Amino acid sequence: MNTILSVQQLGYTFPGHVIALSGINLSIQQGRCLALLGPNGSGKSTFLQHLNGSLQPNQGSVFLEQEAVSYSRQGLNRLRSKVGLVLQDADDQLFAASVFEDISFGPLNQGLAADAARQRVEQAMQAMGLVGLENRPPHMLSGGQKKRVAIAGALAMAPEVLLLDEPTAGLDHEGIAQLIAILHSLMQQGITIVFSTHDVDLACRLADDIALFAAGRVIGFGERSQILLDREMLLAAKLSPSLLLQMVALAQDKGLLAADATMPRTDHDIMALFSHQQPTACQTAG
Amino acid sequence: MSEQSFIAGGHRHGGHFAERLVHGLQQALEHSLDAEAISKQRGLLQGLDPRIKLLALLSLMISGILASQLVTLLLLFGLAVLLALLSQVSLRRLYRQAWLSVLLFSGVIAVPALFLVPGDIPFRLPLLHWGISLQGLRSAAFLLGRAETSASYALLLMLTTPWMHVLKAMRSLGVPVLLVALLGMTHRYIFVLLQTASQMFEARRSRMLAPPSGRLARQVVAASSGVLLSKAFLLSSEVHLAMVSRGYRGDIYLLHSFRTRRRDWCALLPALCVPLLILWKHA
Image (cartoon, rainbow over all chains, first blue to last red; front, side):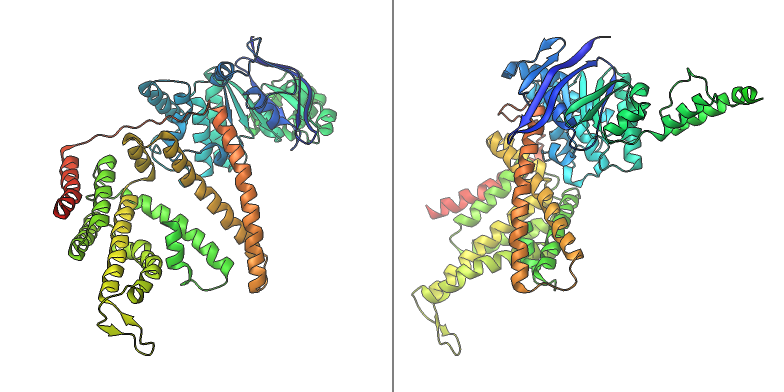
């Protein structure tokens, strides 16, 4: 698998000597979904902004396809064409007077002709289920719709990597379910997803890999189950372990589930896993 | 529009300043929703190409400013009323959102003219015995007439055209893209800040046991304004970040596509003729 984005010894200090990130090394594989998991203030959002070139590191470097990112106009244009960013608060992101105009902002900045830009906007709206809302002003949208417009705005730039800062913040249950479905479909299209969250269950549900953030550092990085089953590490990051995965680990310890059983993502998965394994467990007990 | 409606509606709603302000903020949001709904109705002005509509209504506004006879002004005002009726805009709405506010604002300027402009004095105010001159009356009538007529056309444009179509029309008529983008963003974030302000006052109100004294209310407003200003600064940096992350490099581009039909030209031509006729009559 190819590394599409990576950082080496990345450090960033805010004005006033507030250290936001320190000594971060991370590689993001193409086509995978990476969760930046950590409590509030652990540096996840700042890290995301570095990946899109919105912030320039004080130390270390960001690499796009093994090449150090250049912060020249041309270099940033290349980076932002490949790496789209969706901010946490959709109100910050939707600055145009209408949905259509907002989504067209990125493609037009990429220098696309009007027809090509219009086509991109229409495709993004279709993918996000926003058809019919073209002329709607953003303040007349629901929270979930705003979030989808924000994602469409990034998608219309046809990025290879999509960065999402706390994508489920402020969304209700249905909004979250819709968003997860959309992100799954984007992953199937081969788009690399990187999202920040403090929600262990969301990371469990969506991510392939997890980078655990604490106090501006990455204290753990690996495959989903490897990180989420490490109770000590999660507690060190001031996060509570996923109940779902704890149950599976316990079931494996007790011999109720096979040791090589696939780690579930949702409660449906775990139900399916147990109902499938139950006869084996009963036989073992017998 | 929203500010006008605060003035028109602010004092009708009782209660304290903060309550009236929250009510006014909510009204502004409601007016905006109403305006969007009206712009989607079937009506004469709604059916026109926004560019043509913008030009035609601008031309009629200019006609009002150029008019040197009260009859012309009255006719133009009557035309605004007729257009409103044909576009399903109620006169009550025009009264509330344009006529009353303009009357209050322009009236303050117009009233002194009644007494200060020298000329024939047909009657005097009872008790005060201040003389009202015919010339003063004419000046005041012109000032109010022009302001009311212009405000009516401006409101008709805003009520019958979605805001983004107004912006696109401005852009396609050659208004600099930066100005259009600024107007668009201003409109967008007025609502974000209105919502924030409304929530701030609502949060404060929900924790108040009794209405604050006048002094305390003023302190609250001053402190809230400061908080709102700092929030606006924070928001502006976030917006800039969002723009930069989507490739903004100092230039703004917009897509626009309107189609002009025969009826649009049929509406534009007479509208453009009115100021020309007035100028010709002057000459």
